[in-house]
Length: 244
Ligand code: SAH
Image (cartoon, rainbow, N blue to C red; front, side, top):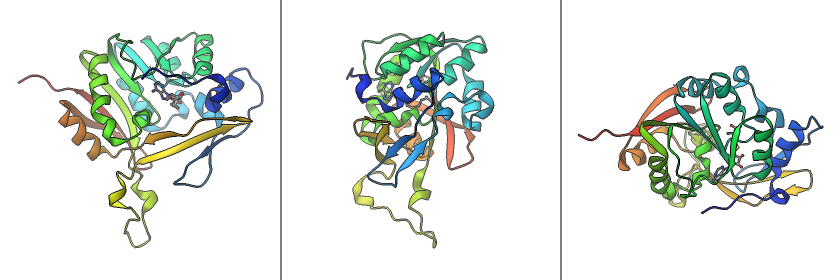
């Protein structure tokens, strides 16, 4: 897979470009077949370190060596890491976002994470704001971990935050409205819209820590929790298991 998001179908990229240009931004609307309509405040995509949730702040503190910021968006994490003297490469499939990041002085590349022709090595792979969402469906986790292993330099680490969204399905009596036959409950679909720009529908995965650990272990990675967020979210660090 090596597809990228063209400008005409990239609502988030358009919102990022508008904000960067200093213009007035509109609502970045999020639709899902599982939820009511929601909205992402565009300014949050440009959050500073102090405005970030604790799990992202901790992720930035743990970054070391050469860092790959995956699905970097506006580049808010890359900018902070560069300020801390780290060597950062940011990748994103959004042409508009990559243009903005380049203007912000970031070494940004229009690269799809799953494109194996991008074969540089990194000491830290960072996937912030539920960046693992790009995996889409749980069945794709083994491919994802294979790709992570290709990108990691010896001793390297993957830092990611995600959430256990089971609270969304919880009834007052503690029972869960989850159809166990329908697959993992964290598999969502989204579509975004900004002004007249409508994006394609895409799959987006939220994964709880235990499920993540189980799959990671199966693929030869060690998974540890580094922080708990304020709302069922967490930061995990994964690394390749040392040979016995
Ligand atoms: N990390 C940023 C942006 C999160 S939004 C932040 O925390 O603010 C998710 C980003 O991932 C979007 O910019 C989207 O274009 C990008 N993206 C989605 N699929 C991708 C893929 N397969 N490879 C690289 N980037 C991807």
